[in-house]
Image (cartoon, rainbow, N blue to C red; front, side):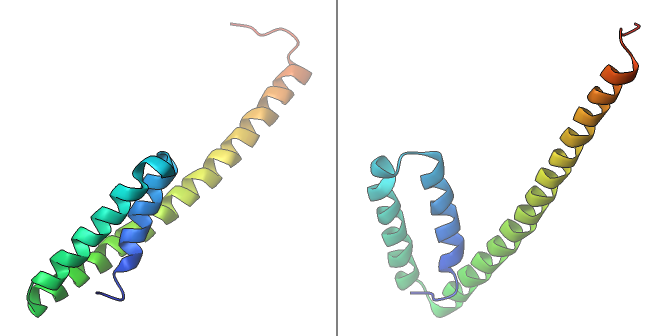
Length: 99
């Protein structure tokens, strides 16, 4: 079993369980993890290190896009607030819209 690579799998499976019902996919999730574990046990040490490297890279990509997502959410909130303030301003100073 690889100690440092479970976070990528848990993030992936955690997202799947958020999107779908936990009761339906609980068995499939355990089965996939067991299959991956058996696969890792059946390959050479060099191949196992390669998959550890891939898991690390997946973690980096997920972290990168997770940060970009958080930034986008904050920008969206700021834009919504600006839009509402602009709408209020327009209503206060422009009684009837001119098109």
